[in-house]
Amino acid sequence: MHPTSPASFGKARERGLHKVALPPDCLKILQVTDTHLYADQGSRLLGVNTLDSFRSTIAAFRQTGWLPDLVLATGDLVHDASPEGYRRLACLLDEFGVPVHCLPGNHDVPVVMREHLRGQRVSCPQIIDSKGWRLILLDSVVPGEVGGHLGLAEMEMLQHALDTSDLPTLISLHHQPVPVGSHWIDEMGLDNAELLLECIAGAPQVKGLLWGHVHQIFDERRDGMRLMGTPSTCVQFAPDSPQFSVDQQQPGFRLLALMPNGQILSEVLRARAIPQGLEVASAGYE
Image 1 (spheres, rainbow, N blue to C red):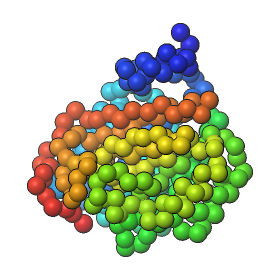
Image 2 (cartoon, one colour; image 1 turned 30 degrees about the vertical axis):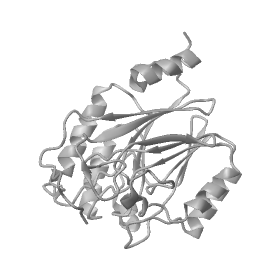
Image 3 (spheres, rainbow, N blue to C red; image 1 turned 45 degrees about the vertical axis):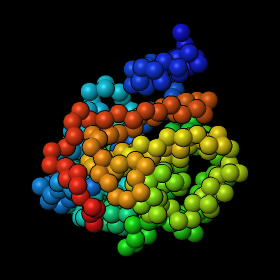
């Protein structure tokens, strides 16, 4: 059976994307998000050592045997935005042995991130063209704010990127552009999401939107696009919760296969264990 046949796609859903043969011309991506590392290797978020948790998540990914063409790291990468944290993260990301493209989240300081999150294969680009796809990475950070906003320069860059290519396109950012069903974090999403959605409404080549921030799985299809939110590599938030609530779920990551015909195949996988020390009863963090 040809790996791109509809029946093969059905098997990908039933057996797991990482267990299905994929055509060599598809673009295979690993997404990691919300790593929340610190300058101090022993620092904890809600009781979890985020460095240990990230390493456990990487180990779970390696056990799949999946070989990505590139990695996307979609924000809140270093909780204290420290140069030491970014340099440590760059070393860890370099170990994947493939290009790693990063964008900032609300806990990151973009100028510090771009200066120090650099490695042999690690970079912070805006546009990547690879295997017949265009990837656009947006910066939705508002200094000092938890929620996100796409400024004029980002919107102009996005429009130019769409106007100059008809390649199938995946757009990534940190803040969710649609509600995920958890009221407290949906108040901290992208505050001008309607401008983003209006921009891409006239760009049928956009096949998907991908984000972090929500620390939980979101996966829907709307107007021909796949909308995807991905768990954190450390602490998870309970879905469909009106207020902040910690979820007793393992850290996770997302695999994506961007097919030559514009289709997106994807699955979320998780580490084996809940991180030690998780403070389930916490009312929040800064």
